[in-house]
Structures are given as structure tokens and as C-alpha cells.
Image 1 (cartoon, one colour):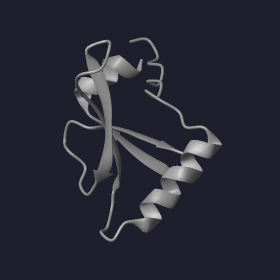
Image 2 (image 1 turned 180 degrees about the vertical axis):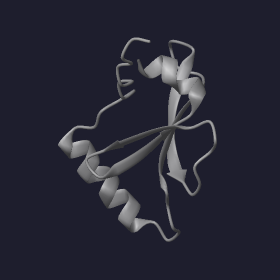
Image 3 (image 1 turned 45 degrees about the vertical axis):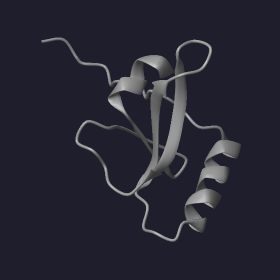
Image 4 (image 1 turned 180 degrees about the horizontal axis):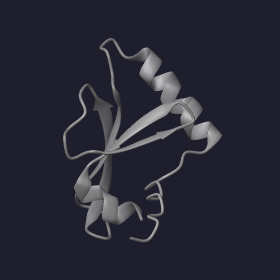
Length: 82
């Protein structure tokens, strides 16, 4: 069997984005696991991005950890982020 290459991360954060997400997470009154990114119907291209605090990791979430921030990506959103 050939050597398997590691799967690339779906997204990476800039330093400014990571810092801002850390600020937002610190302001939360509840224990937060990370930030969940998803998509919903709407917008010019038919889809709009969503972002919300995540209290739990869903079994189907794609997990990205970058610069000390955990991003949970809904599986429906992965194709729109590539």
C-alpha cells in the first residue's frame, strides 16, 4: 500500500481572524467548544455562510484547529469552503 498523504485542512485562519475569534469566545457566558461554520440557503449564489458558538462537537463535524482556535465545520459546508 502506498504512503497516505495527510489530508489538508479545509481552512486556515489569518492571525487577525484567530485573535478576533479568541476575543469573541472569551466574551461568552457559556463554556464554548469552538466556532461552528455552516451554510444555509440564501445569498446571490444560493448559499450563505453561518457562524455560531458551538457548545458540543457533532460526530459529523470537520474539526480544524489553527492558531489556538477550534473551528467546527458542518459537513454540508466543506465543499463550499474548498
